[in-house]
Length: 292
Image 1 (cartoon, rainbow, N blue to C red):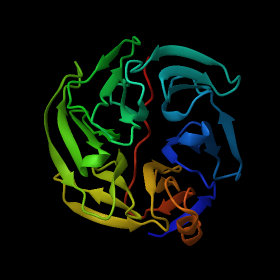
Image 2: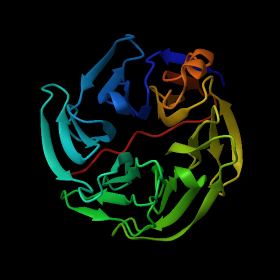
Image 3: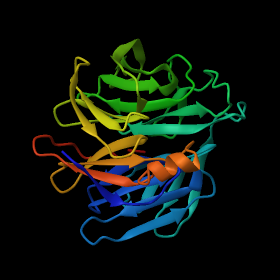
Image 4: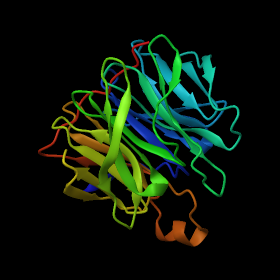
């Protein structure tokens, strides 16, 4: 399982990779550049769209031309064809040091996302939220965090995985598939150094794949939290993972050069690239679309 360079984007903070099964192409964001990216592996065509703010997370919808997007301060709908943005709601206006970060739809098509505290002290003042299909917003009853990440859901939708990247542990909680109520938070996996937990996804067998920032690796965890396998990534800061390809047998991995000095970037020239890993024995699942 060798990671192959797919798009050498030199992104400061490549993140949020998702495979679109309708267009058979991969999307991702360069957060600090406020830009959404797309690559078609069949044609080799790469394109991008500029955003009015940093694009932190997003989800597909029933309309192939429309995305639900999480900008740094708000949720909105974005039309890929026209570039128009339709606002939904603002997030944490009372907390000037926070912005949106990780997000993913639950198995019922509701968008679950978290925020991040950009203040240097990284106080745990950020939260997890859910945008329901009627566009109402609610804060999940989970402890406050500094950097939300690793949001994904078990195959039956009854477990929510998440983390505070500063804490170095992937957490899991019970998630009521009908009401969306959460509870019973506990440690799923303690991420050993080097590296901290970043973006995650669930494969067709219910195993969790986690990009480990600073660890130059993606780790597959069994449902009981034990390490099943480790995939080396040829750059130090993997940030997010997604399954794609016609058979969902390719793992796409975004990376970043955020925080690197000129010397570190010279020693790590592929930092900020998009990678692809061909998998012989594992398959992923189509991404759940926002049902609102």
